[in-house]
Image (cartoon, rainbow, N blue to C red; front, side, top):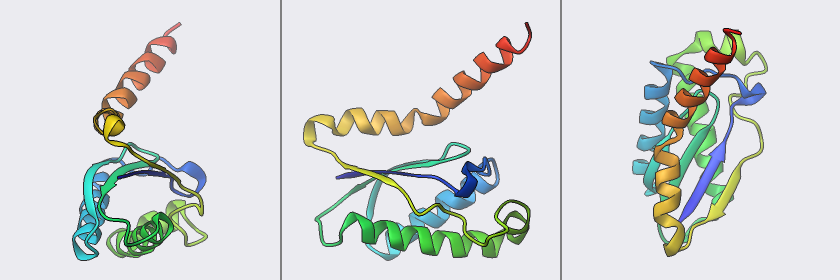
Length: 134
């Protein structure tokens, strides 16, 4: 199992609805088409967490290459205005990404971490708003 994290260029906060839902659908379709068993997928506003399970037929770098290239192309087809507004260089993703292997002992911990990303983000935003009052 692998835990991937990657970000859009310039760390833009573009993944609000309806863009978040569209990106989730695109990535899940890529997983289905390429036989990647995507166990968890969560998309906060400015990054993506994904847990993939399967036999190591492809290197993690190849998995990322497929997902980043196809998702960017499909996302910009659906939302060309996002490309013009935020990604004038034409690239949705940075070149970098984070990946780690997950042992059986850590699997549940990582899955809960990925599932709770939006809850954590909401909590941080609420705290920031409260601090802004003073």
